[in-house]
Image 1 (cartoon, helix red, strand yellow):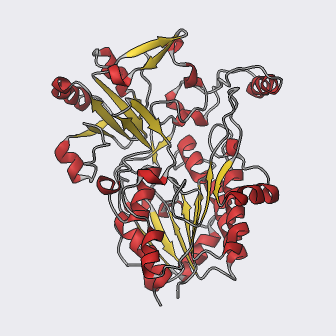
Image 2 (cartoon, rainbow, N blue to C red):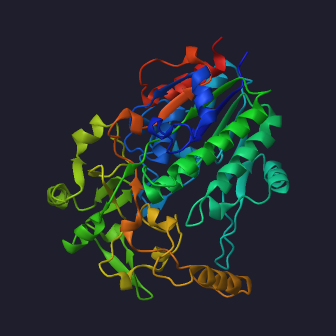
Image 3 (cartoon, rainbow, N blue to C red):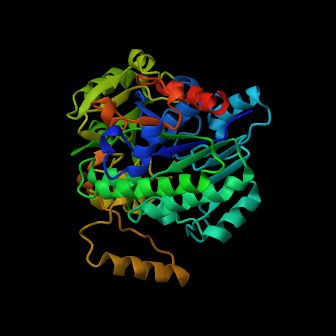
Length: 458
């Protein structure tokens, strides 16, 4: 008989952020136990979640970042959602080998579409042909979509990511977990992203961080109280800690100035042309996958990357094996950032030539991760008026860009991907049952087994 277990992914939460402002988490730790989780390279959402849920490293499950270069189509693609990208079974598949009747509900953990989970809710905007982006979710089974949005309202997509991101999306997901409790899933996975936004904007020492941690703690406490009569065991974990940064590093600009990166012009804007480039970087927080299409340039590119201030190390084939990143999807070279640095995707040398998507929130078109999407350009006078007027024009049927995002990468104060300075600044694992948690820090690949143990032990 399986114990109903909920696994709450509180992104960015670390032992160093706990304190008097986290009474609900403190009570959970006092009655249970807490330990720290070791490092996944890269410590980014998709790679860490895949490691936790499969019990294997990126070299095995294949999720080498939030995005990568698809060599067969010569495209960089980020935030793909299909379960088919994972090359190893996930924890609920393993649980069914123990009990074929085990059921799972997945709320917003990534690569959720078309998986074998019984219940799934994941963000999936609508993109009508007229260029609009409309908030929506994808669900398994389909009726869950209409039921949730009827009871909770439309999923607040624009509070999930972008300059308006805040607690509202986290609260919606937590409320959805309570609504879906009627499905009686033995395993429920819940992703709560709130701290991720705050810590990237302000860094871990930001003045408002304790208040935001308190908000997250309140959402978790409220959700667990509402589920207390049905959920037997509780796990709260996180994917990574966020480090204070003050040095954006522009790897693609370096490669371009050495005539290694190719661009093309579209309507007066420069666009990265990865297939025509000798080498280019797919930036992902504090790690980058550098693909060297022209193998005769490999040593040149490695020397260039190693000389860049802010680059701590460049992984070659031996380094990739050491950090479990030796997978065909990985870059030929992988730079890791210094603790106070992070990598931009920027490839243009003059902001006047930046692609039109650069000043918008566009997570799929950009050939790299862009945390500056969390910031409205501070040089815009009366930004609310500008945004409002553009939205009105869109409702009237006019096409326009919501081009309000800054190109000033120094605005970003927090990043992740590299190993934390101390375990207290890295990811944590909290359980309501102290007998199921090792006393020492656990490896990321141990998380899958611990979830299974919570479902089956005792």
